[in-house]
Length: 129
Image (spheres, helix red, strand yellow):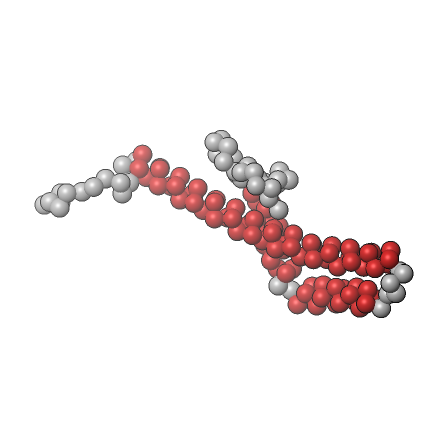
């Protein structure tokens, strides 16, 4: 789903966006919906049946039916691309969620450090005696 550009780190504390300019919340929602669909038995059975039917139709064509064979080949490729795209949406949502969590943890630690509660300071062994 990504084209390799890093659209999330622009230095302005904006949520990361994917190649289509979707906000983080939409990326997360689409990833969740895609994961649900990819794990849905009805979707998986229908997807597999559609691929199997196209392959069976292709196998029953005559060599001279070039256009039909090419059309069925394209159909199988498109069905595979849909599943790959949805899996990519799940992966992108996971990456965005991890980046958001890391950014939030860093922001919280920075806040604590500025307030004097940070763990960055080294205490000497006798500091509390």
